[in-house]
Length: 608
Image 1: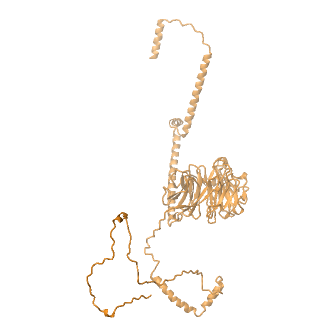
Image 2: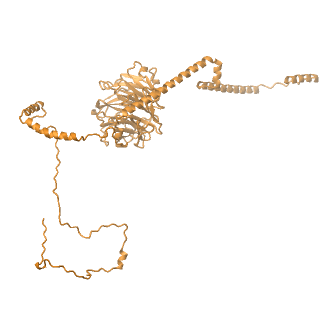
Image 3: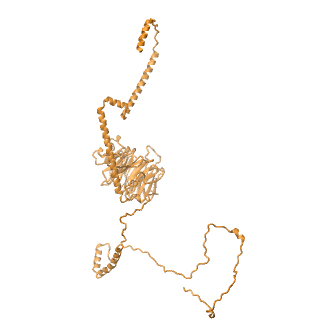
């Protein structure tokens, strides 16, 4: 756009001299003041305002040519083939390559392309873009804050809410979750209570994928690791049942009541067998039974937790089970007496099968979980604490947590980061412990809910954990990445820690053994040198634990002796009242004074 301006001037005025003269002011406009406007004035503080006196005008305009940009993508797998060549056929591609290589233009074309390619290679070699200038300094990893969040909540569909007893993940990348609901309070009958349990899809917490409808409530339910559609369950009345998701909500097969457990089945675990149909169950009646899903008429093996002798009346009730697929012949049992038994199925006798015993807790052992990396190390949960045992040290744990105010209910190791384990408490808190970071307190505590937490199950990938509470709600919790991935030196540091603690416990056990042997030898020498009378006197003066019983027996004998005396004295008084009084006898004659003096003298001598 061209802008033109034409100047017009007379020819006679070209080159004329400019003459200036003085001129007074010229009044263009006048605005007199108005005092009434003062009252309309409002002071604004603070006040900021920008003012432009005239409109912005530009005589010239500049604009650049807009560049049109188009984003295109190419999915290049293998190109350059003609249409008549099938790239999936190896013979046809080889035939076409030989044809191209025999062409006269093949060699000159390759030589021309080599020049440009060589130039690019030399440029890359001139500046090494991957060079690390500080090779001796390790890059500092980004410190991520430990966190957890609740992803989904799965609720009991029944009106009367029941506790969550067991949770099991499906083996197909854990896309489903089997949750059992059952009330285990002794002799508590709730009217109109349902016996249903549910299988949930992880992504859909609104509606269960399948509702299991047994006649008796299910206590525990476990997926078959080799078949995603097969499950096995332990019932409240001691029976075991086999389920198939494809056949609906009714059990496929059920064991006979006469050959089952006497008490509710608390744990059911699959065995690493060739057929993939064998499993074993445990109950508080003190029995462990091995079953085959193809024949549930009777168990093919039974072990009673009593030693010596397989006497069921003396058996210890099994409260939890642990089985590692990589050790097919060994398993661990937690009892109601606080003892953990490490069993071996290869043993010929029951005493050989229950060779190792650990005194773990004051009350029932609620959970046992073996570390997937360090197989000799296992975690036990009971009463108010969690303890880490090593199979090399039988008398005491190598590590343990402090006693909590709330009781612990369940616990498990992390499958991906082997220095972390989780514990649940009755106050609704989930604790995350990392033994490499700190041992005195948990590295993360998450308040899941206000109700008591019952059970816990970790996902195979380590980032998700399923937790159940007493109100029938199952929570899916996701943890941050730093709690699920291992660092470079974690395995080496944890190996050194476990070896150091095991060595320390072995030294303490040997020292305690020596002290016991010295005490036994000393007591044997004292028994050989002291006489029987000295031993009896010593027991009377300083009674031992056995002497307490002697004191009780002596006190009882003395009490009954006094009762006999009092009863005999009462009988004598009654007899004297019944006997008639005798007639009064005449008084004796007076003695002469000389005889009285003699008698008095003899009495005085006797007194002296």
